[in-house]
Length: 178
Image (cartoon, rainbow, N blue to C red; front, side, top):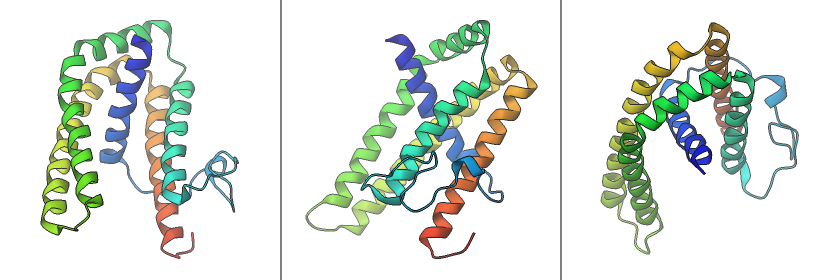
């Protein structure tokens, strides 16, 4: 159970870190390109549409990253220790993030549209995202020294590839050619 919680916390922090640090480059890697009815892994997409498929593929790519890093048992233990030492701080920033997201979601789905309430909730969510990003950066500073140059490069490539995938989806949705 602790391993699942640790992976979930790392996932949340990585998603936030990716959102904060992603940089746009050219085309997504060919293994992530999608065609009609296919996601980035060549699997049939559901009825969720582009954004749903994008988010689902994001989690799949995140799990691929962990596999590609080939962490040693010692590195896993060291990273676990860093995350364990910050567990309370992580929960302290993730809980408000989840709460603010729910508040925004409820404001958007309210029977009567209240632009002011939606904007206020979005502003609060933005501040919560900032809090998570600051903590993620702090944790990253303690985890990076535990990694090899190749592992750090793999993470940088992951972030760049993620940005390309996002750009490709946005371009496609906007009718732009790649």
